[in-house]
Length: 156
Image (cartoon, rainbow, N blue to C red):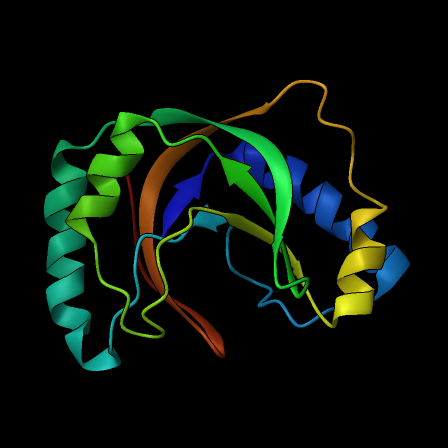
């Protein structure tokens, strides 16, 4: 996971809290930082991925992305769409593995997951983005989602 800076974490947490307060808890994994997914791996590859994270983090610097809009996956996952600066594309290339599902990579920051009617309702609580949200990618984290578990995090 490419992890956002603390200010972005707080801003996205406020948006998510508003949704949860008005719609319900949803099914998204809580307890992990807001992030852009870089890939997914089988659990038996953990040692290799940790080594890869350590290597990539040693030469990567923090970089900006703009969160420019909201979108959904099949009206079941509500997310923020980032721009794709060159730094993000290079970082993604370092971790290009989609073990879990084989879907095409769509960079996104998940805000809420649920049934279609819940996600549609959640959209009504989104703030107007008259200007993009400026976010900074400050590190890489490897974790598990079900249940949430942090394995390693390295800040740039």
